[in-house]
Amino acid sequence: MNSTGLTEYIGQMFACGFPGTEMPEDFIALVKKYKVGNVILFKHNIKSLAQLKALCADIQALITAETGHSAFITIDQEGGAVSRLAEDYYNVPGAMALAATGDERNAYTAGKITGEILRAHGVNFDLAPVLDVNSNPKNPVIGVRSYGDNPALVDRYGIQMIRGLTAGGVLSAAKHFPGHGDTSVDSHLTLPTVRKSKAELEQTEIAPFAAAIKTGLLPAVTISHILFPAIDEQFPATISKKIVTGLLKEELGFNGLVISDCMEMKAMQTFFGTEESAAAAINAGIELIFISHTIPTACAAIETVTRACAENRIPLATVEQAARKIIALKKQLTPAQLLPEETMSEYRKVIAGLRRKTLTGYHLPESGFPNLGGKPFFTGPQPFIVTNVSNDVDNSISFAHSMQTAFGGTGIDTSIDPGEAEIAQIVAQAESATGIAAASYNGHVKQGQLKLIQALARLHKPMIAVALRNPYDLGSLPAHVCGLAAYEYSNAVLSCIADMLKTNEKPTGKFSVAIPQIAL
Image 1 (cartoon, rainbow, N blue to C red):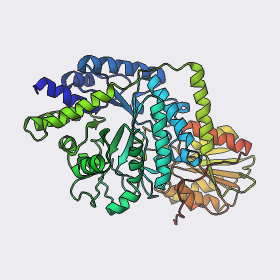
Image 2 (image 1 turned 135 degrees about the horizontal axis):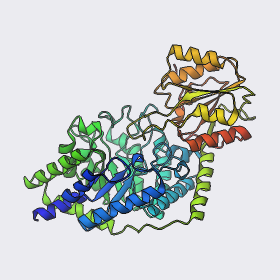
Image 3 (image 1 turned 90 degrees about the horizontal axis):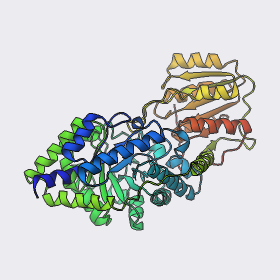
Image 4 (image 1 turned 180 degrees about the vertical axis):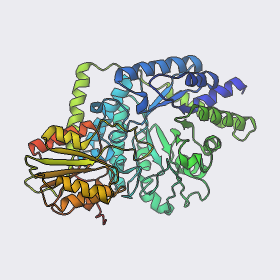
């Protein structure tokens, strides 16, 4: 293989991101020099569907001209808490929310709509669904991104999402193999370890992936940056040949595309080095490497892989086989297909209907929600970055002020983790209210939010507590406080909540996870 061929093969094995809503010059230079064949987009790259379509067309024109092959244009469009599209009403509910509907056909519908919208605007590869079993309620990074805490339920809903995305015309990738559901730390920030026996892993973590692989429908699997000492005591899954090749490819028989999570995550960057980890991941059996944010890091990683090939630390046959697999998969991609405005309008209605079905009551009497009266009091934090997979903070979203606009009364934003003085101040402001609605956003992690809700509950007024991400927050509620799980913090879900409270419509969702009691 000559150096030109090696450059082109290695370029096919990388997916890179960039800031902004247009390709910057350094990204264009990266593609031209290293023949990078793939892109990952985030919310900061997207300001509208029209702009997304133009951006994707530009990306395809550049990469096709430089490499001779179309690009994988990837995105983490999971739905709910991890949604990248600019318009809320085209973002479907997330995994746990869909499972709350009790009908796995809704996962298929969500997948098909997502796939069709992405394909129509130039994105051809959705990095979803999450097949992690959220068996640890304290998990800071998965939570609502999982369908639930039962492996059989996760595989049923996950497989339907895969079927839907496929029907919608895009590739999908199940993540985060062998499983990220029983971690108490975030691999974006450090290196998690799951200390379970292999038998335990097979029973819970691995089971949904094995089921999805057996269908023959799964195009790709994303590997996690997690240590599983029962399988490999030395290396995390991303750079473990025992896990990627031994377990996934040989034991489970997966012959699709194996991709990394972002190699700039601290689990790899801090403990193993992004550049060297890219080479190690390829030797472990990963075929598509993601350097999602920093262009100089992408350049360095590609140079490291190229040197490793030149020094025979990566067999040339490994690179050639991976690149050929990627190119073959690209040839199966279906071209973008314009969706008529009437179809887009219908999809907005379907998504809104799905979102309404996800809302889940807790401690809710037969009579429905309490009447908050003529002087209601609304409070809660604005969205904040829960994990690095989250989007940048949108300061225009506020539960308190959205509800105040809908119902009148008083709306007070809180800090993300209120202390005693702030709690006392907010309780004093609520004393003259006729009713209270208080929101939490990952309050089981930022427990000052839950302490505020308990303090407001001691006023013994009609009260509703709304969990705007993980439903585990509701486990701290006194018995007389009604709870509502909304699973995401978006303007779309706030509008849905307001409509439900106005009509006293009883929520129909059912929890797909156990809600343990939280002692504060």
